[in-house]
Image (tube, rainbow, N blue to C red; front, side, top):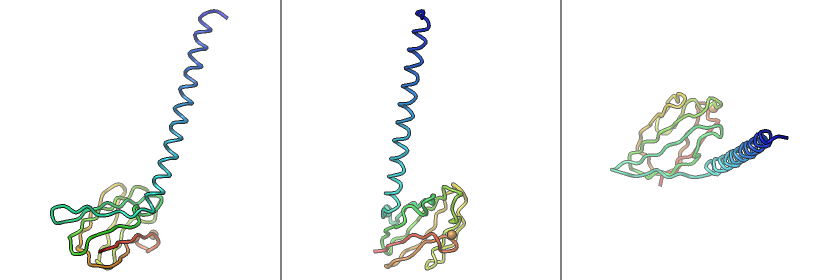
Length: 138
Ligand SMILES: [Cu+2]
């Protein structure tokens, strides 16, 4: 083996190690992302209150509505923004029957619905009521 071959071999080895390390890192973070989204799904989110209104965002993903449970304050005008992030879902619209809300959710287009919640528990759901989430109003 001449010097050039040795240098080329070492360079290749370093490249291979770097690539596999990068791939490992990616698979690690992908795994963690999955874990955290599963965690997210079980989570109850709370609306943020500011300037006399409360706002929150709910995403439609492959897991359904995330978060699947949303806490709101009674009597404070609410703006809840729904964003559908996937085509692999039947939740292409959102229905909140008690507040007469029925809106189409175009892919990746935020749709904000406004209503003033009253105390109680309500459901937001897809058009057929298969995928659903809860509004907890206190
Ligand atoms: Cu559905």
